Length: 341
Image (tube, rainbow, N blue to C red; front, side, top):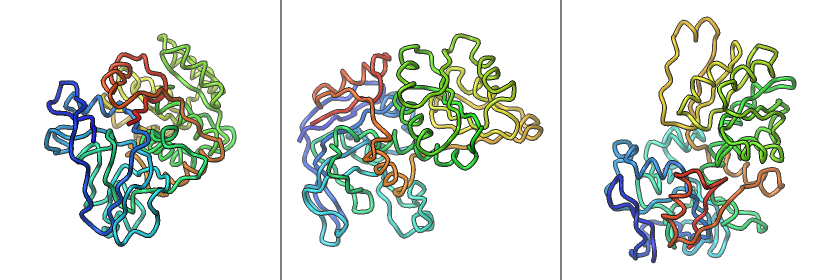
């Protein structure tokens, strides 16, 4: 089969022929990939940022946002059948550790992360487990929803946390209107009554957010903090949901928080530097977000089937993986890039 393989950090991956994955356990599921999402994390992997954290041995196959059709199942698999359309939760989990039993799949003590720590889904086939596949509504096509497996799931997971403090009359600031941000805005609209303020460098990206539920849009031009303060009567927002996490976004986001406000960190690359006295005197909170649970993904699929969450995508053939990577890295790609084998 064909696969997008990373051989060396700080070099572009190559599309090459590799062996198809083989069944090795009773709970294994092999998925024929119908769409594999391209994520900014893939760029960070190529740059070597995940080298120490993942511990993966190169070369390996990229791709952690995957959807397709069940190709083969192990003898103990009963939740899906061959031919079913599925989206794949990013992690392969054991189901036995405390985190799994508590429903916190992303903190499984014995996890494998296809596309991060083991071979991923930018290929014709992916091996995962029965615990990781969500059977899709018949009306959902894998290529249209693949990026929801991580980008959508992470956005939903963060918004679901924020929803507990976003009652009628509150304000939520979304930093970044790109691949994750446009999903987060829709999730906020679906789950909360909050007034949504979206911040981005691109006027064109901001214009699109209006159709996704943004109530106010603010261009990054040096006056963004003051504008948010004006929109929040000088108090700041109850929630700041940061899909950028670098390049000044963190400093702006902290300045946009009201007293006792909560800052949800999703994008990464920068460093958070806040005096502890400021945290104590204002009771502001900082919350990290790592993908989401299996149940989060199942709930997101329901919202998608109901038409409340839609992906803005650009399709590429698997052979054009490096074109997609270039478009994402250069800022040409709006929404999510999807590789189709």
